[in-house]
Image (cartoon, rainbow over all chains, first blue to last red; front, side, top):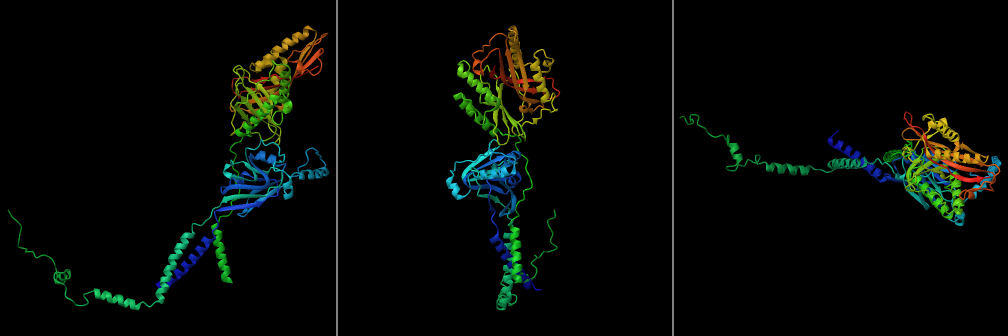
Length: 279
Length: 322
């Protein structure tokens, strides 16, 4: 295999590397990713293990009316959550989808408690009589109307918004739950979490540059195989010969180094009998 | 076709290498602040309590007690409103809202408590110890009792919001005596009086001394007319809380119900101007004073040469019945 053939093969590989690098660069996913989930419960919960994920940056929850967010100790939040239907965000299934579980509770009318199953079933419509998430109901119910979630003494930090609440997740202390609920007890709309994901793209630029170098090398090898350079070689050789005056037989210039070299040794003549001063 | 598949596979592999897999939630970090209430929560409870109390004080209306004042505190304050409405010289007691210490537990169950020690309400008055109780996660913390500190008494240091004080069972044997034993003995000491053998088990306190001296005077007055004076003292263990102190001792927050009956023979009792507004009915030859007292007992850590004793206590009259 000649040098030229080797260079052509390297050039072909370089071209493939260049194409792959450019495709990878064009298709590299963005570092900032927003994952969204549709909610159909009045409460959404993120546990401390999810909030501890370093990629998570910000959370936003939307609803038709007011939205509140709180943090609490795990045992307190779990005790509070027993009474309400809630969506638990347990992590990421993919970057586009959360893994979730839903706990559905039937909140009976506290004024008519009954241990019988039938009475519990009858009490369910009373719970549903709370503000409905349907657009018609939203128009009919004032935004200020609030659902009785009981005491808020368990909440360590609170945020509130109308239609949307957004929280920087660094504000949540490690080990705490984050609980978001609609003010009026209706279902929340969406949950969005902004995250900074790790993108392994450090290899793309070197791949492109090495590919370019090899492709250029291969291109030169191909060009050298296609173009007849013998006239150019001949001109170069003749110019080189012309520069070499030995070949032309011209006498050296008087006093030039060439003349002295051709004349022989340039060592000075020394009389061996001559001695130095003796005193 | 094969080339397309190969190219697509290669591209997919390249893209798969670009973005990392989504993170997995596997590690649960430990809680930074273990206490059931952090400072801001406790401050919110205290502030809203005194806002509610101020509104009720201004109107002298116990009906204005809502979510923050309840239990014996509401009864005691209501009685003060009744008396102050009839007797100008009897204002309601001064309850400072500025706190010099807040005691929170790291309780994980209910009911749970919050205690606070106020700044002194005046130069000649000792700080007030308040007790809030939350019955369940859905209920607010309610102020249920208060008592002035015993002059000269010192409250032990307590853990802050990071750790919270360890709630102790009444039968806790890590302190000697256990909270239940200390309260039982103290109540028995109050029943038996200054001459009780149990008096040697407790440090002197002005609350017990005043109770004993009042008992002696009233018993003597009743017996002089052929009547009797009887104190019936009952602890409320279900509403008693105990917290471990930083030095390994315990603080016991105990409501105590006292019914003091005073009877005479062949005579009619006449109540003082301060007591008359609290009389429910007409006094004849016997009345019973109902008190809702609040006592804070301190149990020293094991190995220390100290006696348990009351560090805060107050005798709260709420009603008088014939």
